[in-house]
Length: 307
Figure: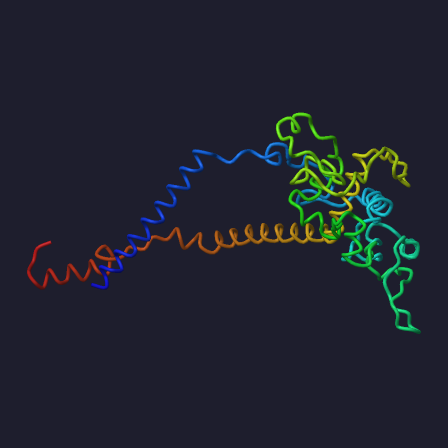
């Protein structure tokens, strides 16, 4: 009786699920969801090729220095890098004295405490400090950016789908809203204090175009600073910031692959050398073995059987 009741309850539950699934399907096909502006006009990042790409990629230190210059003169006004220290810049080719000068002249001082009074204070950065946030706290950051919080850029190249390609496309993707978009989706007009960017997921973001004109940054090495060049350089720098040990990881991976390849070859040669002769020897066993045949003939003679 209990089994019958359990079967009936399960059958009723399955029936309810099927009815619910049928109603949902019929509603979907009768009135399918309308397309949105984000689905139709959002674009995926354009491909970006950097020297660090691929399993054998290496950083272009000259490009990284240009990217750091763009970050310093443009991005650092709103974005910190809390996981990168000034002394890490020595890996880009800066000398110890240059790193100390960069830290000392940084536009944002490091939060500290007054040793005499214990009150909050600030001080000049030193090489061991990390790049400070330009805002004392999240509330101050939001208040200065229409309630939008500028993200920390330490891991931005790894935390965004597309990595460096996304950063580059975003920095160069600002434009006016297409007339086609406004015609098809009048309610999707970019609100005040926001900026249209086809590479941003919802098409509108609070950050104004940071790279707005050619020559905005004057490169120390004389490279022509177009908007595309500056966006490419700072994207490469942020890739380094997110993974400064990339070259070492690539070298270790290559060494492991070569070790496994050589080990495989040596193992195969050893296998051929050890087992080659053993494989060639064919040992007769069973009824055809000479010893067994001799025993068989002897038994037949004793039994008086011919053959």
